[in-house]
Each structure stands twice: as structure tokens, then as C-alpha cells.
Length: 174
Image (tube, rainbow, N blue to C red; front, side, top):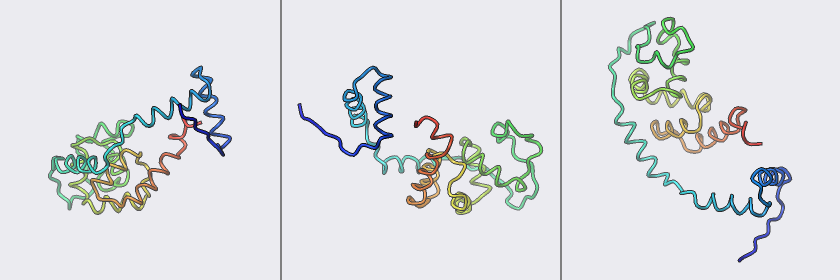
């Protein structure tokens, strides 16, 4: 068997590996080997294939007719489940536009997304996400909208990093 030596391991990483080894009743060496094997055996996703699949899904979303000139209109009932924590009948389009966009982009299903994309042109949605630096969207949704709205990869990479460093997302990385 070959030997591998690790140098300059940060103290925090060493402490986390050691604690993980103790929890799993392994030696530090065994813990590192198990983690390396798990990482190497994990399939590497083909990002081009994933992007193409996401584009195909985005183009198949149904279109919902909407009068773009309407003002202060109640939201369609298909959005009601997204706003379970809010008095739905009090919400108005476009008065509560930012709130509705944020909720649909993060939690909306096919019909809700189709309604939103009909109500707001894709370039405006892309600008809305960009102006907020992706805030309010988790990494998975940022990647979806990157493909669906053709957002710049460098911007989305930065936003994903910020999202993963957030308080809530970082709760398990200690």
C-alpha cells in the first residue's frame, strides 16, 4: 500500500476530522481514508448535460395568460399555497411585486413559475436577481435560475458561495 503524508493541515480542520473519527469510532487515518473514498466514488455531474436538461424543463413550463397592464390586482389562486403565512387576499400585484417574485422564485412550482414568467419578462427577473446578488435564493435555485435566465456564471458562483456561508446553511459545518 502507498503512503500519503498531509502537511500544513489547518488546526480547525484537524480538530473536526479528529472529532468525526471519534464519533465514528475510527482512527484519524481511517476517517481520512473513508472520506477520500466517499469523495472519489461520488459521481462527477456533467454540468453541460445538467444545464441542457434545465433548459429543456424551463421551455416546457406552461404559459399562463395575464393582462400586463393590470394594476393592483389580486394574485391568482394558484399562488395561495406559497403564501400560507400571509393573508393571501390582502396581497396585490404589482403592489407586493418584490415579495411575490422572491417567494415564487424560491418556492414556486411549475404553474407559479409559469405565471411569474408571464407576468414579468425574463430579462426583468434576471435583473431582479442580479440587483439582490441572489439573496433569498438557495444554491439549488440559484443554479436553476442561472440556466433558465442565462445569468452570468461568475456572478452565480459568487452568490452560491455567499448562500452556503450564510448563518442557516452553515449550521452543520462545525
